Each structure stands twice: as C-alpha cells, then as structure tokens.
Amino acid sequence: MKTDVIAIIGAGKGGTAILETLLKMPSVFIKHVCDVNPSAPGITLARQHGIQCHTQMTEICQDKEVDSIFEVTGRKEIFAQILANKQENTRVIGSEDARIIFHLLDLQQEVSDRLEDNNLILERRVLERTMELEKANTELEKKIIEYEKLNEKLLLINNEKTKYLMHATHQLKAPFAAIQSYADLILDGYAGKIPRMTLDIIKKIKERCLLLTDAIQDMLELANLRSLVRENIKMELYPLDSIITSVANHMAELAASRKVLLSVPATGDIMVKCNKNQILIMLSNLLENAIYYSPSGATATIAIKEDPNSSVRISIIDYGIGIDEKYQSRIFDEYFRANQAVEVNERGTGLGLAIVKEIAQVHETNIEVESVPGKGSVFSFHLKTAQKHKDD
Ligand SMILES: Nc1ncnc2c1ncn2[C@@H]1O[C@H](COP(=O)(O)OP(=O)(O)OP(=O)(O)O)[C@@H](O)[C@H]1O
Ligand SMILES: [Mg+2]
Image 1 (cartoon, rainbow, N blue to C red):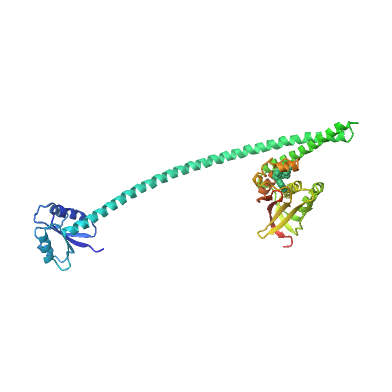
Image 2: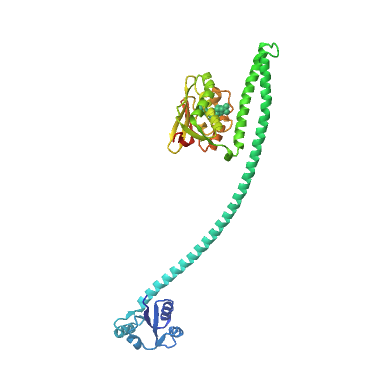
C-alpha cells in the first residue's frame, strides 16, 4: 500500500485532533506541522513524534513530496494562499472537508470498537457454552455407564427370574400328567363302575388338564427361548419342502376337525438357513391360528416367494375373522387375546404369537401382519436361503 505524505497547517485544537487520528493510521507519514504559535499543542505533540515543525508554510507548499495538506486554521485567506502556492500534485483539504473526513473516521473507529466488543462478548459466550456442553457431555457419559451397569443387572435378574419360572412351570408338568393319567384310569374303567354323572365330571377334569398342560408347554417354550444365549442357537441348512410338509402333517388333524382346507405350496429345492425345531414351532403356531380363526369350509394357505437378496418370504394366509387394527400391535404381547378370538376358540393361552416373535428375532426377521376384520389375515416373515438351490 502506498504511504500518503501529509502536512498539517494549524496546530490548535482541530489540528491536534487531526494529528492524533493520523498518527494511528499505518499508511500515513506526517512530514510537516505548521502553526504561527510555536507552542501550540499540535506543535508539541508533533515534536514528540519527530515531525518537522514550522511557523511559516512556505517550505510546506514547496515540498513536492507532500500528497495532501490539511488546512485546519479555519481562515479563508490561508486556504487561498495555500492553493496559490502549493505544488501541482498536492491536494488541499480545507477545515470543513477535514472535519467531515475525521467525523467519518471517528464513526468508523466507533463501529470497529463496537464490533470488537461484540466479538469479545461472543467469544466469551461460545466459551461458556462449550464448557457447559462439555460438562453436560461428561454427565451424560457417566449416566450411560450407570445405565449400562443397571441394564446388566436387570438382565441378570431377568435371567434368574426366567430360570425360576421355567423350574416352577416344569414342576407343575408332572402333577398334571399324573392327574391326567389317573383320570384316564377311571375313564377306562380300571376303578370299577362309576355313575355317569361322575364320569362326565372326570372327563371335564381331563379336558382342563389338557388345556393346562398346553399352557405350561407354551410357557416353558417361551421361557426357554428367552433364556437361550442367541449366539449359541444352531442354524443349519434344511430343505424348506421338508419343513412345510412336516408342519402341514402335524396340523392336518386339527384342520380336518375344524373343516378347514390346507393349501401347501410346492417349494422346489429351496434350502433355508434356520433352527429347524424353532421354525417348526413358529409355523405350527401361525398355521394353528389360521385354522382356529377361520370359519369351517375356508382355506388356510402357506405361500412362498423367493426374494432376489438370498431370502424367501413365507406367508400364512387365512380368510377368517381378521384382527381389528387397534389390536394389531398387541397380538404379540403375552396373554393378549382379542374378544372375538376368545369366542371362536376358548382354548388358547395368548402365548403363541409371543413365541413366534421370539423365534423371528432369533432368525433376524420381522413378522409382518396384514389383516382386515371379517376378511382374513396374512402373517409373513423371511428366512435366509444361504444356497438357493441344491444344484447351484
Ligand atoms: N390368524 C388370525 N386371525 C385372527 N386373529 C388372530 C390370528 N392370529 C392371531 N390372532 C389374534 O391374536 C391373538 C394372539 O394370538 P396367539 O396365537 O398369541 O394366542 P392364541 O391363539 O389366543 O392362544 P395360543 O397361545 O394358544 O396360540 C389371538 O387371540 C387373536 O386375537
Ligand atoms: Mg395361537
């Protein structure tokens, strides 16, 4: 940047103010200060800064180096005299113009001072917020560690609870099996002749025993699934065909008794990666629901669709009572049964779909439900087909 060579004529109050301002500017060189009074305040200040001082302005007007002369005497004849004697390239700035310029400079200084103040305030605030955030973050990290520990404890307690439940339920199985066999002995006539009414009551006892045994079986199944360490569950490749046939055979009697037709697909050579026992339980529960909640004469279908991303979608379709939308999110909860389902099928514990959900999670799949009340339901999930076809 070019340095401006400046001279100031008039070193009273105004001249001193201009001198002070110009002294702060980096690109300005003040070469001369002139005043008729050699002890004017501007002259004293100029001397302190090693600036040439004069009582006559002749030398200043002759100096070719001077770019601008500030006339701050406020006397018109001096302004005219400077104009008449100055060098061609020298600018003359009169007191009025100088005042405006310095007013603007003052304003600029004020604005930049304020900006600097605001900047400082802003920096302080950012620092404060950063410190607050860091503190909050540390607190949060502490809380996370506490929660993780708490969670571990809860998991342990839950595991203990599940084990206890399994044990207690298991203990119940034996007495119920005994009651059932005693009832069978009586019903088969081994206890001698029994009046007809007593026999009917014993039949009811046996039916209730069967219901309870089913419920205990389901509770054990669920507790067992929840207590398993998931990573240890064996996943192997099985032909889907054999799994579906096995489920269909297992359900054939129930379907016949409820007069529901079973429609089973041809699966080809699809191999699925799964825990076979668990998938058999899962499909049996879904197909059992499709049969129970369908009217007689209806069809319950297992459908399959191969996906391009190495999986197969398996759907269990029925044309039965369907599920009200408000219940659809609750049907996987333990012991939840919709009113209409209870009317259609008294036997039922409400544990079937809770078991299905656990098995689905083990197989990293979601159970999707589409259902329209009065029209029917479709339950679908995916299984991985690690190898598409045996021959591949
Ligand atoms: N295919 C279906 N059609 C209509 N409602 C269904 C169907 N499947 C499930 N539901 C509803 O979801 C509820 C829960 O089903 P879930 O299989 O868990 O229990 P459940 O069939 O009542 O008894 P169980 O434990 O003996 O299977 C059922 O009671 C019923 O209200
Ligand atoms: Mg069920």
